[in-house]
Amino acid sequence: MKSKPTNFTAEFGLKLKIERIKKRYTQEELADIAGISRAAYGSIERGESSPTIDTVAMLARALGLEVWQLFKFE
Image (tube, rainbow, N blue to C red; front, side, top):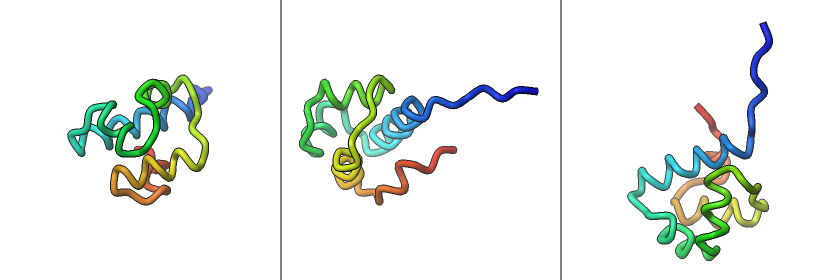
């Protein structure tokens, strides 16, 4: 049985969305706190673009998380 390949960018975006909702932030609020544009944030959350490691660090900080926690998919 073949397993479906995972789309890491989409999984990361979903994890980001889950963490954002837990903190009760809108996309605009989290983007502002992290210091990135809302459009860039939305693209990352939708899995349309991959963030740089610097952007990942800014998002983790804005969410009060360690960087590794954004890569722990369930």
